[in-house]
Each structure stands twice: as structure tokens, then as C-alpha cells.
Amino acid sequence: MFRQSLIRAVVVTTALGALSAPAVAQPTIKVFGREVQIHGSIQQGAIKSDGNNFLTMQSNDGSVAMTDGAVNVSSQIAKKFRVGAQVYVRNIGQLGKFRPQLDWAYADYKFADFLGIRAGKVKTALGLYNDTQDMEFLYTWALLPQAVYPLDLRSVTISHVGGDVYGRFGLTGAGAISYTLYAGTIPDDPKGGYLYGIQDNGSEFLTPLKQKVFGGDVRWAWHGVTVGYSYLRSIAKVKVHTTAILPIPLDIRADVKPWTRQAFYAEYQGAKLRVSAEYRKENRFQGYTALQPLPPPIDAMFAQAGAPLDFSAAGWFVAASYRISDLIELGVYHDQYVPDTKKDAVTPTNLIRETVAAVRFDLTSNWNLKVEFHAVKGYGDTSYPHGFYRRVNPTFTNKTNMLVLRTGFNF
Amino acid sequence: MKTVLFLVLICAAFSGSTAYAQVQVIANASVGATSVTVDDLKTVFVGAKSTLSDGSAVEPVLALSGAAHDAFLSQYVGKSDQALRNSWKTLVFTGKASMPKSFGTDADIVAYVARTKGAIGYVGASADVGGAKKLTVK
Image (cartoon, rainbow over all chains, first blue to last red; front, top):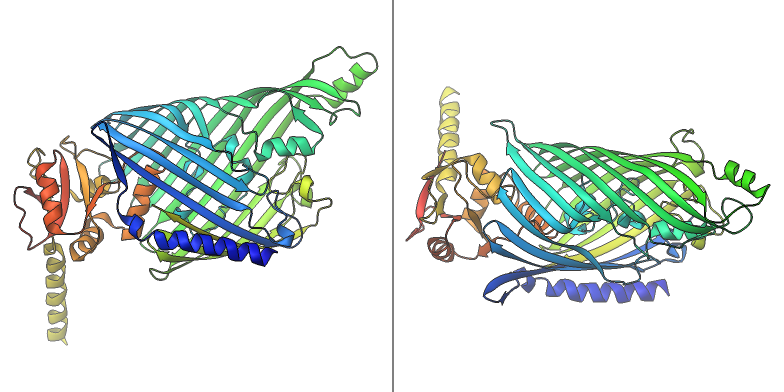
């Protein structure tokens, strides 16, 4: 079954890849006399694992439920003014379910290189790759380091509806500093991993998880070296029906205030060598309020079991890749995620550590194939899943090995 | 031994100047600058900025391939063709820029640069730059 699905997926993407050669030409149309560019990408992957099922897939049986793609249109209306939008679709395990999402859509006015503004739905600058994480064609990897860029939790930070102020200052002889400041709201994803984790925990969101957010990113770049820092701070209120706090059904309001993420990162990109590292820290202060009167002694039990929580999680990775020819690039990375940094990262419930080796084949300038092996230890806190979900794992094991294939083309 | 070393140095010196001579940087007549720095070329051609140091707004134009393209990338941009395209795809797929115009021949690049306000491009050393103006690289 897996073999048949894999063959089907390979045939389809091979056909698409073969079509990518003429797609090198720039696809443009004219609308009201203005040139509009159209670009897109599509990716198909397959995972075969042992140990735990991954990313809501039945990956132990082999799964090809790993499809995503995007199409964007944009136009430079004037020298300093541009508009554009992108639609993104994915079906990764049970994530996304081919529901089209407006990925970004905004107007951008650039007063000068040192000052511009964007308004609309904008990809959020956070760490090295948050805003570009879907562009698999940029990377050696089939999967970016999941400790920092978890595919299942993509929507929690991927973009915001609001505005950015951005710019770049050249430093004479010492590279340049780029900055982005933003504020807005992060929309909910009804087919995302955060929601599924809550559901697996015996709870249901009664209202969407919508975050009010502000933050910024600053990075210095010089001769292929990039060093930067990002900060994102949000607050969220959500009504939840839950049996996770007490063994009786409760309707509660969860206030997450504040929810912060910080990223410290560095990258070197040479002609053939690319080395990168990022450390991500997340803090979440979460309180609960019952939405109905609770009789004694339930009120006392709720006060105890529903006491405010102060979460602190951290993830990091180091990665290196080397292009040995126009066709082949090799890479390795090591990453680690700790759901609760106040506890020792020694048990499989408080650690996900993986070592990954990958080879990327550039079959044409627009079509690639990646083969990647993951050796994973631990599965993390399954109350707040990070790749490993109860819905596809009746029990968990300490070790998971995975073979990941992914091919993609873009135009 | 000294003679061999001398010849090697001479060859190295000439090979360097030959490489620089492989490409001419051209711009539309509307671009105020008569010269451009290597840093300007690099940042403009990877999409990091859209003005030269003198404030001239510019629109980069790429060659699809060829000796002039390879020479331009290695001398001024410091990226492979794939890395350059990826820089632009990063901007395009986040909505921050449009993909620059790319042409297959020097003549097409010259024609586009000559007729497009703010355009800046590069062609082979022997190409006729026609109505475009040649910029000195500092």
C-alpha cells in the first residue's frame, strides 16, 4: 500500500518536475496595464518510521500524506509601492487537510532602504527561517530542525495580520543591519497541531485561539555571516471545554499572558558551505477562570488543580551543509527540544533530541529531491505535542528512526 | 626558480585582469551615477536594497547564464547562480520583491536597460552597450 502510494506520488511529482524546465521563464500577466508576476511551489514527501508515528501520520506504516504548495501573485505598482498575496495549502498527516490559507497578503511602501512599511497579513520575522520555513527549495533538508521549526505548530507564529516597519542600514565596511518591528494578531488554525494537542488532552476550544502580538527582529549581515535576535510577545484568551483539569467537564477561560518567544541565531553562507545555529526560548504564563459557578468542594479543587502555570520551553539546533556539485548537496544537523526547562532533560517526556543526515539532489534548477534519515530520542510532553500525538500513538517508545523523502519544484 | 615564480605571478596578474575584463556593468541613462561600488552591486543584485550609494533608485536585470553572468557573480556578488536565485525566491515567496527580469542574450539586456528607467545590468566585455551607459566599478 505504502509502496503503491509512494510510486504514485513520485510519478506525479516527476511529471511536475519535468514541467519545471520551461517554467524557468518568468510567468507574468498584464492586469490593467501592470505587470503581475505569478510564482508557486509544490512539494510531496513520504515518511517511513519505526517507534512512534510522526506529525499525525501513520508513519510507521509508511505515509505519503505530506503534500504542500503555494501560489503567489505580486505587482510592483510604483517604484516604492508593491502589493501581493499568496495562498498556501498543505496536507501533512491530519494537519491542514488541503484547506487553503491566505498565507500573506499585503501592501508595501518603501520610503527608502532604511525605512519601509507593510500592512495586511505579513509573514513574521522570527529567527533564521520562520518566514521562509515553507520554502523547502531553499534548504538542504526535507524537514527543518523540528526543535525550532515544528511543522505541526507552524501556524502559531507563521504570520500576523497587522503591520511591519522595516529597513536596512549599511555600515561602511562592516556589513549592514536589518530590522523589522511588527504588531497585529496571529489568526487561529483550525487544522493545526496546537488544536489537535488540546483535543488529544480531552479539551475543545470553544473560541478560536487568536493572539495579539508585537515583536521585532534585528540582524547583522557581513560577508556571508548573519547574526541576529528576535523577540515576539503575545497574549491570548480562549474559552475551553475541558476534562483535563478536574475529572468533571468544565468550561473555562484560559488567559495566556504573556507568551514570549526569543530567538538567538547565526548563520554562515559561503559558496558551498552553509553553517547555522539557533537557540529558541519560549515562556508562557497561563491562568484559568471557571465560566460557571463551582460548588464546594469543586471550587477548592479547581483553585488547586487550575493554579496558574508558568511554562518555559527551549529548543536549539546546529546544522551544516556542503555542496559537492551542482547536483548534490550533503548535510547534517542536530537539534533538541525541552518542553520544561525547569526539569532535567533526561526523560523521554521532557526531551526530543534528533540527529539528521540528508542528501539533496538538484535535478534541475527548479526541481529537487531529498533523502533524509532521522534518529530521534524521546517524544516530549504529549499534553502539548511537538511532533508526536496521542491520536496516532496509543503508546510511546523512547526511540524513533525515520526515513524521509521529499521532492519539490517551484516556478 | 625565481623565473618560474615571476611567470606564475605575471600569469596570475593577467588572469585576474582578464576576469575583470569579462563583464561590463551598464545602466539606463536615468541613473545618475557614473560609477558603482562592489558593495552596491552585491546588495542590489541580491535584492537587499534598491538604491545605489548616491541615492539612485535602480532595478537589477539578470542574465540567464553565460560567461558574463558567471564572471559577474564571482567577482561582484560572491554567490553561485543557484544561491542568487534562492536569494530572490526568498523575497518573492514572502512578498518582499518581484523576480528581476532575466534575459538570454547581451543584446536583450542592453535593449531592456536602455529603455527602462533605473535599470542596471551587466553584459560581456565585447558587447555593444548601445543606448545604455557603462558604469565604472570601484
